[in-house]
Length: 70
Length: 340
Image (cartoon, rainbow over all chains, first blue to last red; front, side):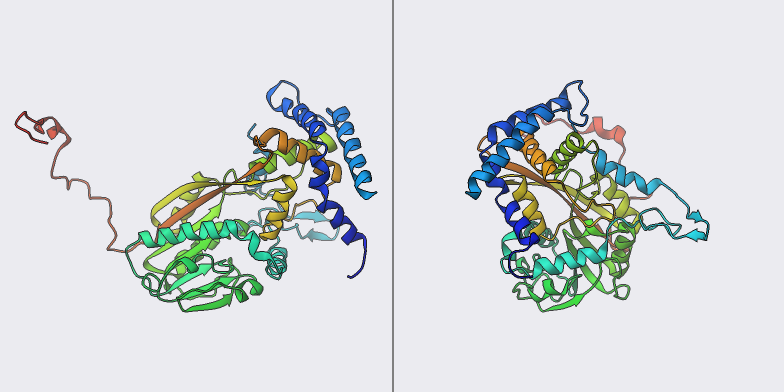
């Protein structure tokens, strides 16, 4: 397969993933702490337990991607 | 958190005995995942593993992913040197690009048969002064006669074998009496950081988790495995290799480059990008180092087993003792006259 297709675009997006994540280190740390707290505390890990933190992380991530695309 | 749930669940499937499913058309074939009456497990898609290895071997810059195999290969070669013997004929199972033989010399191993399931890998085998024959062989079906080899080596390929007891038994058969098998395989707590991060992230984002890391053999099982196959004088030791990466994505990219992508039948064919993002954040937070890098642990299990032979030391017969424990008190203590 040559030229730009869905696989090459997906791979390109995955390739810059670490770069974008590095720009959202704070939000990632907050989300990570929220999930890690379930391993030590009494709180059991359920779906969407840390959804607020994750939404913040995802917004930061997509903004970073948009800025990069400009 | 041990995070060993996913791995142990898969190993416990061994104990399940499910019969064939009866449908309206009579007996339907059970998917290869469950224990059949033959006693063989079918966890991995061997065909897919072969394709993955072929693809990886054809990469132009594939050598940059060889660091783990090089390291383990050199340590296995060390163990070969520790045995003060010359081996006329040796077999390297799953040898890949010959990571072990490049550290050996002609005095220790006189002739080598290098096998791998992927032909591309064999084409790129490294330079070594030992005369080598390369054969494409599936590790689970060794095409060699009994009592052929003096030494069998295996480095980092046994963890993709479905029927491990059967494969070890075949290795024991192709060995000559008083031959030795030196193997290294990843086991136990390998990649536990990646496993835990993916498990937690998938639970939080999607409400459940699936196995992304393949099941590994525990150290405690190795003794039974080798003993059950007929090896004696076993030696098992564990080495932990920790590699630091910039982040979770790099860990996964390198694993793919090494040819270690998942090929279990029950693998999920996709990983949501939300889960990937969440897992990368969890990985960094739970296991990250001060400088921002993340570690990945590879627990390498080294095993040495000998095929029984009369010349090997055996436990002494009952009643053949020449001294008694009661005489211990009669051993003279060192006197002031300078007895050391």
